[in-house]
Image (cartoon, rainbow, N blue to C red; front, side):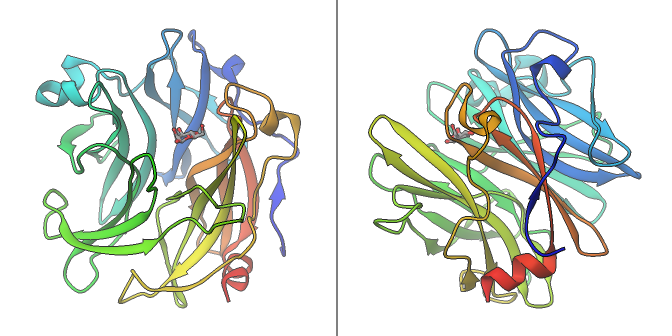
Length: 303
Ligand code: BMA
């Protein structure tokens, strides 16, 4: 396949697909686990605070949402870390490291958003490891293996005028340092105001491949689009190439109309062994959609 094909089934999940009362379902982390495709979806509850729920599929296209959330922002689930998630948990990204699945997600509270880390090996029991940034920071993805003996993550510290992507490293996934600047917005373009990492990086022989997002503000509204970049395998703070143009943008009603208009946003993809890629993205912060492409095509856009 050359190109990026939005599925005819889109949106593949909406609030009507959820067996309990929610305001919306969107921004899912994705993984293949025991021959099933799992989406770890953000559900915004009617009170406006988000939890995470699993949706399951055998073909990667037709998903069934579980009857109840698997992770909630409560004192029971988060213990000593509850203060960081009191206003909700959002936008999970899943990285498999050996036989464990690490989940980076946004903890939202009076302190503003920060990055939380949890780990699971069965998607039933989640051990909350705590915050791995200070606020304000989000859009965090972990690299799936050590590079030069250390773990690496990408995140996006921000304030009113700075929304730049940084890399940093850790010996144990909990203590982070060795900061490296990766990229910032590009004035006058579709990514003029904000950029952030989207999907966890995947190793290819040409480099680390990942999707990222860019934002441009027009008047009172922001337009979110998605693009792709390739990072050096040994020095991941070096960008080998990126697509100058977005690869996914809001076009259809289900991407333009919803709680937040004109947004396509992704935090999960499944890269198959044969090079096929399933991008799970959300339209207008209100649903979950699928786009199909290949690793080879994405790499060709970066070179
Ligand atoms: C980002 C995140 C996402 C959301 C996007 C568009 O800052 O909060 O959860 O999808 O904005 O509203």
